[in-house]
Length: 467
Ligand code: ARG
Image 1 (spheres, protein in one colour):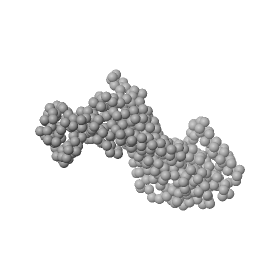
Image 2 (cartoon, protein in one colour; image 1 turned 135 degrees about the vertical axis):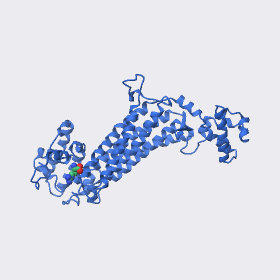
Image 3 (tube, helix red, strand yellow; image 1 turned 30 degrees about the vertical axis):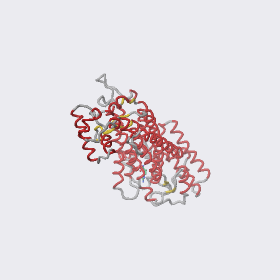
Image 4 (cartoon, protein in one colour; image 1 turned 60 degrees about the vertical axis):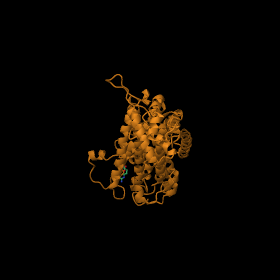
């Protein structure tokens, strides 16, 4: 039987009826729905609406529904179920009879969907948080393996200064830490219980809201029933967090694609994560990277869809809110599926350290250090910049590097140049003088790896605490 029909004289238009259903996608919420329904059932028994026996039957019935769907997913192919809430009610009544209809006493689908989605987002935060942790570990392993290998760092896509490969990899680790942090923050605000909010103004039965919240692992019950049943800001916050993560991964993918070209030649695409061309036999394409970059667009689209759905809604529940589900599910499933693949790619990619090192030694990337050399000799930086620029110009004309110029040539530009200049602009020294916290001096990078390892450990512990 329908969850509503008494006041209707005409049947629904069949096309409209099937069109407005959400069961095809909200069936993902089955577990959340069963858990939340069990908490509600216990509260009903406490206030005398269902007997101890009825409660036992309801709880057992809910469990059986979960088991049946787990054993045979097609069990949930129910063309008559309007949504997940209707599906569970129908199944329950089939299993235990009319006592099943008592479960809906004092509650509304509006609070149920708000509760189910909060449970869904909370577990999304946890699962994605764990996948980010694993990816961070993959980056950290590669950073450690890179030792003191160097490569060019780019600004404006032009060679800028040499940098440790490990330092470059740690840049991605920092982005991922912030992405994980955003999900942890989101989880805190999301973790409140709408149960007992009713359709809009609160339940008409004296349900113990604290107890229900507690049973579901929520921190507290929500403070306002109108807000609780009508806002989806937790989903928007979550999917926005995912879109930032997707943006970071898309930037990573783009850089890896560039670095894997023959023009850069810094990384060799792992065969296990690449594909070939049906036409050009020599080709190997970085499809994983391109799809990560492409899927980021759709996750950003999900975030935008959620925002636009919410922005024009008056209080309180409106059916438009049903439209927030698919973008939420899509973003969650997309990110969950790509994170382990990105980790696998990172673990198997080969860096051409020799090539990277060579690239780090040419292209006047020691010019900033050369100017610093003059600064340390007392030359004001603006003049030091000019002198070094002139030296670069001369080297360009002579098709050589700065260190290939003779001392006489250098001193003709600035008398402060001396013999120790040549050691100062060697790659090892250029790296070493970036000796500030967060800089690429090898000692600082070792510290940074250790600090990141610690932070990653703390992140993992937090994840275990939630498990
Ligand atoms: N399927 C609905 C949704 O996802 C559940 C809530 C329906 N509430 C209502 N008053 N029709 O939003």
